[in-house]
Image (cartoon, rainbow, N blue to C red; front, side, top):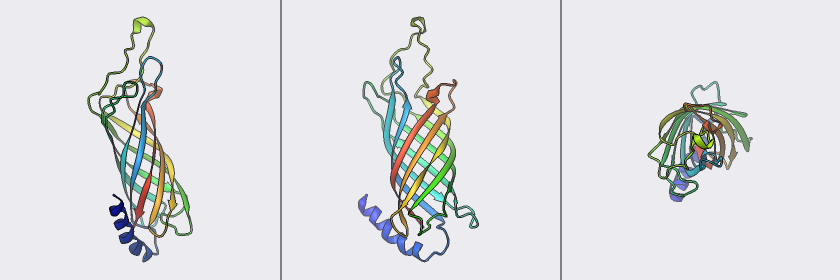
Amino acid sequence: PLRTLAFLTAWSVPVSAQQSTAPAWTAAVQYSHLRMRKDNGTVQGASGSGLSLRVGMRPLSSAPRLLAEGVATYIPNNNDTFDGHPPVWSANLGALYSLSPMGARDTPVNPFAALAIGFIAYDKPSTPPLPCLPEEGCLDESPDLEGTKPSMAVGGGSWFSLGAAMALRVDLRLHHRFDSNDSEDAWSPEISAGAGVHF
């Protein structure tokens, strides 16, 4: 992975250095952590970490702050008794709008806002949640971690420039799963951090 990242850096720097306009493409690999369900005392919590791949393109040459982006995330299963969850896949398509033009060399820190739609897919649960019995006064409003659920993501983040074509990138998202109830657990926070290139 380090050799690949070094190759991407060496290849992209000359390309970006020749450009006087904002870069047309971006790519980033990030380590992501997603909370899927809170522990409410009756149903166990669930959270996990994995990798995210982001690829973006600038759709309009006249809008250097606007970026269309797709992201795919994979989180492997966890068989922990108190934080177990099945393997998770998610994919989103959306748009970013940055405070400064993409790839601006005089902007070492460039915050952005983001909005996307997509889905979150769960395999079969690795460990079932603790039982929630209505006859005991328990009302389980926690979303089940099975199947494929449409979702929306809203949030933002920032690029931290490392040179002409490289940047560190940090993202924070709130994913809303469109479950069959209005549980607050339908909102899942995700934080991602990693390195990226723009060219």
